[in-house]
Image (cartoon, rainbow, N blue to C red; front, top):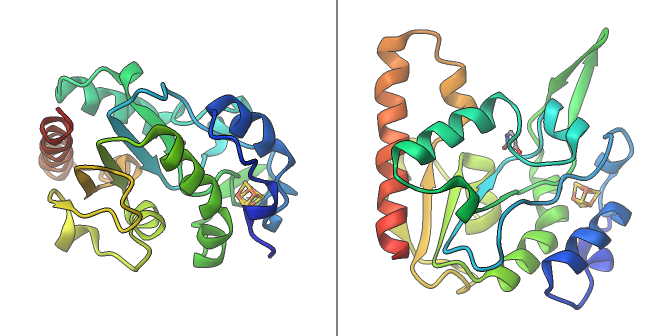
Length: 208
Ligand code: URA
Ligand code: SF4
C-alpha cells in the first residue's frame, strides 16, 4: 500500500481535494468499491465529524452518512441543536470495505493499514477546514485523528488536544451511530442515544 500522499493535491480547496480523490490508489480498497466517498459540508464549519468509512448506501450514492447510520446521526445532531448542514462530515477511510456473502455486501472494519493509507486525505481536510472541534465517531475515527489506539468507553465525551494542532479547541471521541443501531433493546438504545447527544453538546459548546 503506497498510501494516499501521492494523490493528494497541494491545494487546500475542498473542491480540488474532492476532484482528486476519485483517482486515489493509495490502498486496494478503491478496486472493489463503487466510488470514492469524499465529504459533505462547508469549509467554514466549526465542527468536523469523522466517521469510519462509507457504508453500502454511501458507496452507491457517493455521499457520506446518507444511510441508516447517517439518519440516526442527523437525529442526534438535531437533538443537540446542531444544524446538520453546518457541520463538515467525512470518514477516516474513503472507500467502502466489504465482504461478499452471496448478493449481500457485508461491512468489514478497515485495518490500521487502511486508516494509515487514507490519513493524508483527512490531514488535508483538517488543513482546509481547520475546525474548532473534531468529533470522532467511534474507534476507527479516533485512531485516525489521534494517531493511537483508543477506547471509546473510557475516553468518550471529553475534549482532548489535537495532536496535529489543527483543531483549535480539540478532539472529542464518541460512539459511532452504527453501534447504536446494533442495540435492539430500547432500554440500551435510549441511554446510548442520550450519551451521544450529550457528547455532541460538549463539542457544540466548545466550538462556539
Ligand atoms: N458510517 C460511517 O462511518 N460513515 C458513513 O459515511 C456512513 C456510515
Ligand atoms: Fe485512497 Fe483512501 Fe480509497 Fe485507499 S481508501 S484508495 S487510501 S481514498
